[in-house]
Length: 90
Image 1 (cartoon, rainbow, N blue to C red):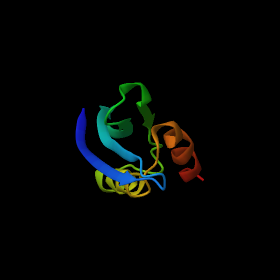
Image 2: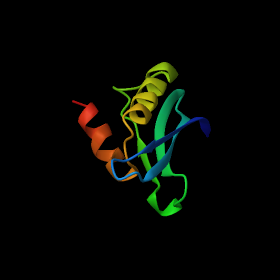
Image 3: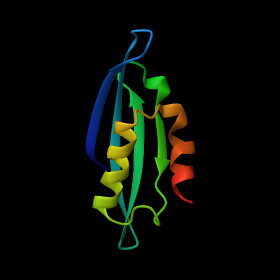
């Protein structure tokens, strides 16, 4: 279930507009909450990426939201979402 979505918009050095969304998804599994992040381009659905957040990183809503906010603030592209989340695990 999607519980919140952040949207970002910025211009590249080439003056190209980018608009991305970052959605936080929550799922209950064996009495535990698990979180995933979906990153998507506002104009192109073929750029969607969905990655589960490792429980060590985010075992509460507050931690999961902090990761979501950080990804949006850094304008992480959907194609890089999995790599960025993997780098955070260490």
